[in-house]
Image (cartoon, rainbow, N blue to C red; front, side, top):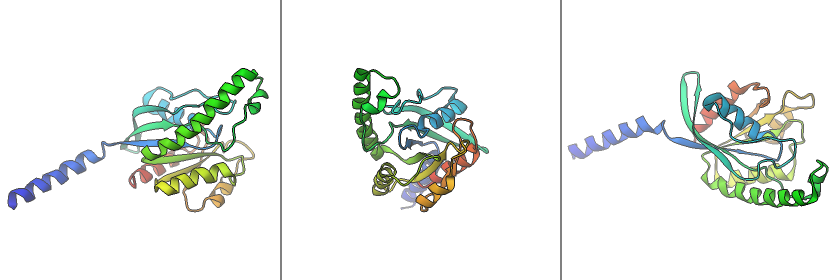
Length: 213
C-alpha cells in the first residue's frame, strides 16, 4: 500500500510538472473579414516571426483551416504553448455574385463561393478539436445577426471556453459596448489587430481562459 501511495504521489507530481507544457488548441472563429487572420498573424509574428495566412479585403480569403504548431506565448513571465488554428469565416449564405463587385471574374467567383461554402463546413467540424476559442467580431458591425448566433450556439453546445474580441476599435464607428450588450455572458476585449492595440488585455484573458480548458 505504501509503495502504491508513493507511485501515485510521483505520478501527480510529474503530471503537474508537464501539464503546463501541453499544447492547447486555440481556434479563431467569426464572420468573414472580421479580422481573424489579422489577429492570428500578429500573434504568430510576435512569437514565431512568421504569419499564419494571407489577408484580403475580399470576403472569404481564408477558405481552408490553417494552423501553426507550437506557438509559445510569453506574457508577464508566464508561458503557454498553443496550436493556433485560423478558420474560414462563418456565413449562413454565400453567393458567387457577392464577389463580382470586387471585379472578380464570374468563373473565379463561383470557385471562391464553392470553396468558401466547404470552408464553413470544415470550420464547424474543427470545433470538436478546440480547447479554447476566440470569436473575432467586427466592432463596426451590428453583432445581432444569425451568423454570430450560429457560432455562439455551436460553442455553447460543446461547452468550450470562449473569449469574444471586438476588433477594429481603431475605426470611428466601432463600438465594443454593443458587442458586450449582445453577449453579456462572455468577456469581450476591444482590440485593433491591425495596429496591435490592447493586446496586453487580450493575452491576459487568453491565459485566464486557458486554465479552464
